Image 1 (cartoon, rainbow, N blue to C red):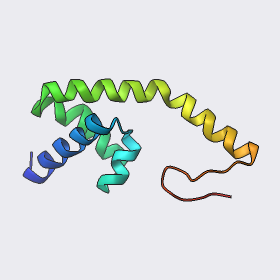
Image 2: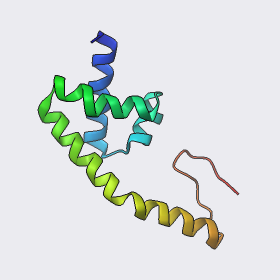
Image 3: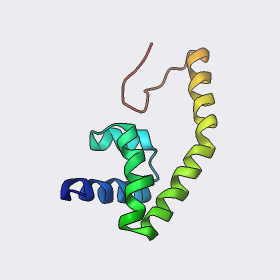
Image 4: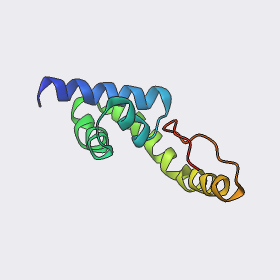
Length: 93
């Protein structure tokens, strides 16, 4: 694996573990696609750091279990007229 990929895998993984960020949030912060982040943390990371991979796996599982709740809240805000800034910082109307 190339050095820049190795470094990105570790940086993204540490960020997710530290902030409990979603794959989408991490992709936005690091300027890569969600697919890249997912591949980094599920396929590449276990080869580099098994302990960190386990931590990140738990964060991703937690985020997945909460996903339906976050989606429901966004839909509720949309239809109740109480638009709040989206995660990206954009306001939709």
